[in-house]
Image (cartoon, rainbow, N blue to C red; front, side, top):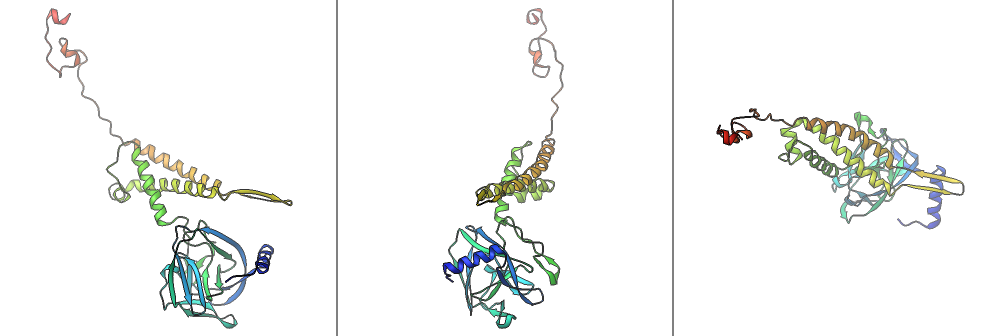
Length: 299
């Protein structure tokens, strides 16, 4: 929905003043207007993008963004099916269910925007009249608030800092580094082989993967760090330092484990033989050849 520049300015001012509100649904079905606590621009170029249509209109979401099917139940947008009912806020502020009448996969996008809404951490998308989950979601680089939970089922919900595919890459890199340390273990070429043949090494690979993952996030956040000062207002955003601390802590554990691995090298004691033997040839040891004991050869 296109909005005018004046309305855009009013929304921005309301958000800065803390008075911008969004319609939200509680765990028992009650509805209320809750303050918008944050607006996020997320890089989602690796995410699928889907268009979900209801009888009221359409919305565009990342595939991992969760859509409510009940006040305490939700599914990822890419997991919805036509005909499935999703939570909505109807006339009079009553929570109802509306059917999904259309689904479409759209081309990838580099950025998409989302909200953080107080209290129940969900909000109504106006055009399709659908209640969606709070930002961030599956592939965003934030953790959701602690109150993001399925209260009725006592089931805590955690957001993903890394996708499964990303962390699998970090595990592979950790395995490559692990095989570089003595003793030589190149026969363990995959993570599955390590888990089956050397289960004691699983912890080491996880620590190594965490080192790589934290380092990647620190690099990723570097472009979003800045210092801003104008009109007496200063703002500093530093995002990499915490991940670098996490990386250093994980590296300590990783180094301890690689040191323990190097101690598993089996040292072979050489064959013992006399230093001096009979004759010149036996100077290389009595097992090399039989020496000839004569004055000439001895001299």
